[in-house]
Length: 120
Image (tube, rainbow, N blue to C red; front, side, top):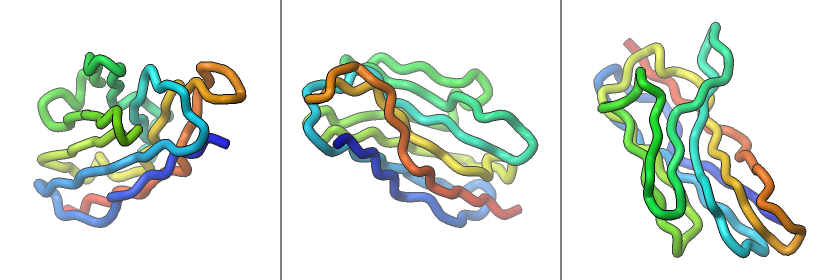
């Protein structure tokens, strides 16, 4: 069974930084696309960033320059470095991945979410 487990969320002051991690585990053959999305207060769930297995990245326009996505293919792990955090970045951050495993695929999987709180 495939699982995505996030870590690294927490409380930070405005202007600070956090790095989120998300590790995929299970009987994984390959992971094509990995990414992050978020649910912030008063907004629909939105894309934050994605990264292909070859390292090609895509960001929400509003987050370019502050957030950086990266991945370690050997560890099946994706990271999100968040700098210059603002109170409006507060929310739950979810990792996701398109994974091929013994059950087939690729299928989309999501982590349980990690809370990020930015205080003003």
